[in-house]
Amino acid sequence: MEKLVAKVSQRIKILNNELQEIYQEHSDDIVGEITLKNLLGGMRGMTSLVCNTSFVDPYKGLFISGYEIPDFQDKTPEEIFFLLVTGTFPDPSELDELNTELAQRATIPEFVWSMLRSLPKNIHPMTMFSMGILAMEGESVFKKKFEEGVNKDEYWLYTLEDSLNLIAKLPVLAAGIYRLLFMNGDIIDSTQDLNLTDNFTFRLGFNRHNPSFADLNRLYLVLHCDHEGGNVSAFTSRIVNSALSNIYYATSAGLNGLAGPLHGLANQECLHFITEIHDALGNKPSIDAVRNFVMATLDAGKIIPGYGHAVLRVTDPRFSAFMKFGDQYCSESPYLQTVKKLYEIVPPILKDYKDGKISNPWPNVDAISGSLLYHYGMTHYEFYTVMFGISRTLGFCAQNIIARGMQQPIIRPKSVTNTWLKTYFESRTNEGNRTKKAVP
Ligand SMILES: CC(C)(COP(=O)(O)OP(=O)(O)OC[C@H]1O[C@@H](n2cnc3c(N)ncnc32)[C@H](O)[C@@H]1OP(=O)(O)O)[C@@H](O)C(=O)NCCC(=O)NCCS
Image 1 (cartoon, rainbow, N blue to C red):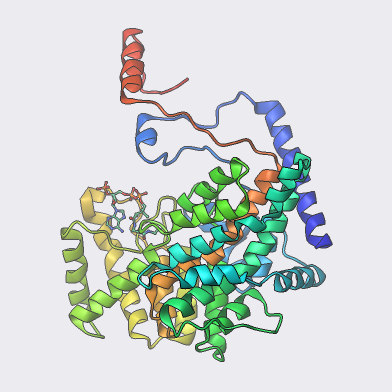
Image 2: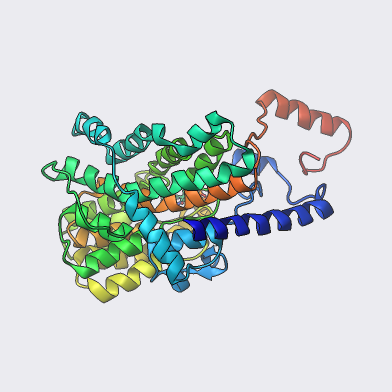
């Protein structure tokens, strides 16, 4: 993997030089202020991380090294990983090298299958996915090299080595979990060197000769790849890796965050929501009936899955990319029709709901992705977050490779108690300083 190593090494040097220059001039300058509202609001709006793999613009969505979704939605997951970690798309020889490397690393050790087979059938596939990754932790090259006392300048290299091993294995692990839980339990093997998408599609073992299903899998693995550094799963993965826990630990931890219904599990919740609508109202529900269903959901104190976002303030461009696919290949799907009805109905309702308190009434990626998979026969929606996880691991790995290359320190924010806050604000009041501005 000479070419990839050279490119990543060059990127790390560039990023390090840039940051050093900025630091020399501005080390004590303020980049933001923290209000009590920020502190109590899940750290929302606090600038607290540097992440160079991607950036989310509230009005334009995901950017990877200056590229927007329409610029890369036709690429492969391999090309996207290369872009995330190097900042450029691979040329044909670089892509060839990466594809070959990954194909050689795609085998899952037999003990992992044995462990997964021994688990109860009512387990969630995300639990199996995370356990499967954790079970392979003993194979970490980083861990071995660290124990041997390798120079910290090389940490990124072994993080990259581990990342390639993990990225290659995840489509195989995921497809195997699908078959263990939802099919007859036999694991499909392949003697061919397949790319990540084809490996996944082939080993799922259904609809494998349908080119648009393979293309949907490719698109799915591309669109979920990264969403800057502060989302629950990426941040978790970064924190864990900042303690020099290897990429297996960091990925498993990140995926456990992705498994939450306010984060990655929302795609499962969305499909469940659409299923409920169809169960209650039939396959072609009227706009009015769907509107009433949405209102009843909100009145029951529940959220509308797939709508809202912590950073975005427009329709998620990933939603639009999936919609384009749906219009092209499965516009007649009843689930997609209902997704469209929800898109028409939900934003105006959420805009006015809770006195306009909802920051973003628009759909995110999860509002549509599952309905497309369902159309192609992937009806077990508990699995959707696992697919999200295969893709998001590209981002976890890229972020952690770069963080190790830049020798970023262990992440350790300060926490305070209610008493600390009370005393702090009292002392500011006593000083006659009634400014609402917080910590100097
Ligand atoms: C994504 C999400 C967690 C962002 O949370 P956030 O940044 O706190 O969002 P907001 O600032 O808009 O939240 C303000 C209020 O609106 C509510 N709200 C936000 N989105 C909502 C939705 N889709 N349905 C109903 N209520 C919603 C919040 O629960 C919160 O209510 P509260 O003050 O009573 O707790 C939130 O929009 C949500 O739960 N969406 C549905 C789940 C989902 O699709 N997740 C995937 C995200 S990619």
